[in-house]
Length: 341
Ligand code: DAH
Image 1 (tube, rainbow, N blue to C red):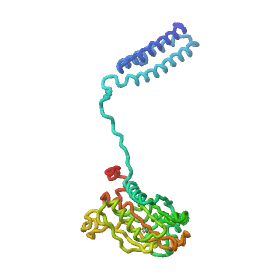
Image 2: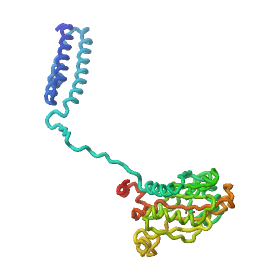
Image 3: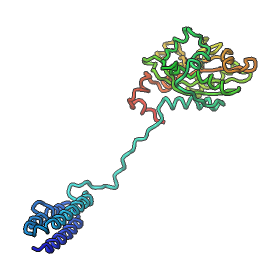
Image 4: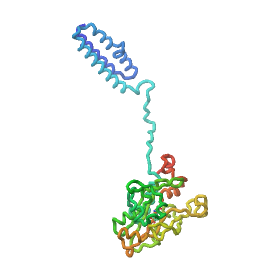
């Protein structure tokens, strides 16, 4: 065979093989074509063995022609495999009448949902959502809220301290000061947010959620506070849910009160949930202590106000009857999946 004949043979063989590969319509026919042209005993291999009979100088060109042909055919083979897959025996049948696979859709976490429900009720009463930082200074978390230095009320907050005199806020009450500092009265705000304490058991988590309320305006009285909170309990729990106020102490309110709602489980008769009392403690509140106004430059002769702090986690546990706060934060999605919406 002359070199010229060899190259012509290689080229016609490649064209023939290409036609066979691209014409194959089933995996079986394709495999047959592969063995015939590209197999170790195939036509391409047979031709390459004849290279030995060529002149020494003609061999590089002949070898290159064969290599190029083989590479092009390998590529054509891969493409043909993709094309015929699914048409042969045992291949997956495409049944277009089968129903589609359902894509799981996420939903709002129960804590966020509860915080939004709480805020929405107060927004309808005219309060505006306001936010503040989770990393705070002693000044906003304690001092300007009238927590005296070295006073036991600071210990009660189980504070998590950071470096450089910073801390993780133990309550959302800091935003009362931040807001009054920036705005003149009237102030009508509702503040949802994360809060932190050194606390961890069935009803406490180191990170939890609060919603703070603050109203400072002309002529605000304790009757306004009780009216607003009564309406809140009716809208959040049920139209027949009653509340009661018990005297309490917070450094930043005077007088201060703790608010109980009639037990969501027994309606007030007494049961395991309310430990037989008929009442459940749900939030702290009071009239803004005039000492705070000195920190923000408000005139206590001009304005008065009330404030309250609601534990979102506790509200969610009561409303949706969960027994442990850990259900919110464990990462086990089974608990939360029961509460779509
Ligand atoms: N900051 C209080 C706490 O986390 C809750 C609280 C009580 C907030 C009374 C208030 C309030 O605004 O008036 O324990």
